[in-house]
Length: 101
Image (tube, rainbow, N blue to C red; front, side, top):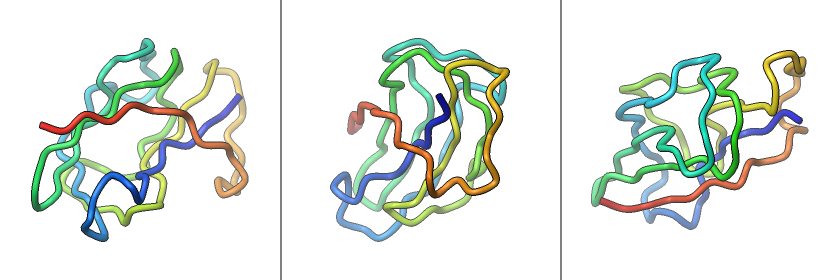
């Protein structure tokens, strides 16, 4: 299955977050609980950890760029052979864990 990693509106009071650093490269396998990406708000650094084992297929927001809350930042999948659709809006969201630094 193919999934989106989306910035939840409930994680912050600002309207967008800056991507600081990706900890998995495109095509890389991440295990359950592994750190995927660090984000920055005006108040804290937020770590996003994988909710399940998956491959990081596409980074939608590069390090140093901002993304609005409620919008996707990456596409993951259960295998590298799965086709990523052109219309990402129909994809389900992957469950991820957030921790605040």
